[in-house]
Image (cartoon, rainbow, N blue to C red):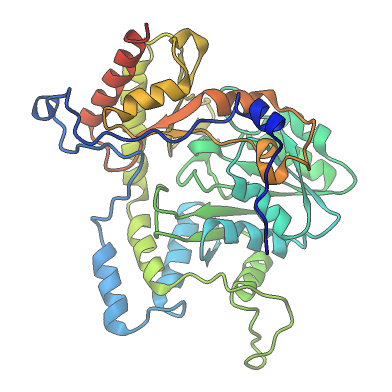
Length: 412
C-alpha cells in the first residue's frame, strides 16, 4: 500500500516558519456590516467562482439532445479550434485536465528517466509532478520578487548536459519575460513548454501567452478564467506535436485497425459536454479578461496607499490578466499574512495563500534537501490572493479593500 510522506518533527518545525497555517473558518453572517448599505448581495465573497450565463446551457442541451456526450462529439474539435485561435496557435489538443495536458506534452517531447527539466520552485505542484510522471527530474530556479515568475537570469545556471527543456509558468496571469528564455533555449538546444494554466488571454510583447514555446498547457478548472469544470488543452503551432497529442490522449488507437496500439497511450480525453461549456466560455474570453483587469485596477487604486502591502505589477511589455489578484504582506503591515486572512474570513471574505514551493513539499523534500530559494520562500510566507472571479462586483472590491485597511488599523 502507498504510504503518506511524513517529515521529521525538527524539519516540520522549521518549515512551519514558512508554510501557511490552516485555512481560516469563514463567517457567513457578517454581523458587523450593514449589507444593504454596503451594496453587497452575498454573505460570502468567494475567492473565485465561475460565470456560466452565456451559451453554456444551450450548447450542453445540444449535446444531450444529440446523444453525443463522449469525446467524439463536434464540440471537442470546435473548442480546440476556437481556443487555439484565441491564443495565437494553429492547433489545440483538448485533455481531461491541466495536469494531463502537461504530462501529454512532456511525453510527446520524449522526456524520460535520466532527463532533467528546469522549472520554477514557486509553482503549483502539478508542474513538477508532470515531470516526475515521465521519470525525469525537475531542476528548480528561484523567482522574481515583483512578477512572481521564474527569473530568466537564473535559468542558464540550472542547465546541465542532461537538461532537455524548460517549463515556464505565467504565474497568476502575468506572462514570463519570454525573449531571454527563448534565446537561451535556442542556444542550448532545448524545448520550452509554457504552463499557461493561469494566463488565458495574457500577452507578451503582443504575442499571446501559450503561443511562444514549442507547446503550452492550459487548465480549465472551475476557478480559471475559462472553465470546463475540469479540463485542459495543449496548444501548439507544430503539426507533429498536435498529431501525436491527439493519438496519445486516446489510448494511442491506430488508424490502421481498431484495438491496435503502437504507443503507450493515455485516457486523457475531454468529453463533448465539457467542450461545449469551454466553447461558450471561449466566446467570452475578452469579456472575462476585462472584468479581471477592471477589478485589479480597482483593487490597486484602493490598496496602494496602505503601508506594508506589495501589489501585483504589470511590466511594460506585458498584459497581465490577473487570474488572481495577489498581494504580499510585508512586515510594515503590522500583522502577518495568516492573521490578515483570519480577520478577513471573519468578515466573509475568502482568500488563498500563495503556492508552497516545490522544494518544501514533503514528497520532494529529500530530492531538494539543502537547496534554498529565498524569493519563493518569501512569497510562500507572505503572499495571498483576494477574491478575483468574474462574478466579483465593484461593491465587493470596495468592501474587501475596506476590510484589509481596517485589519491593519486594528492590529494593535
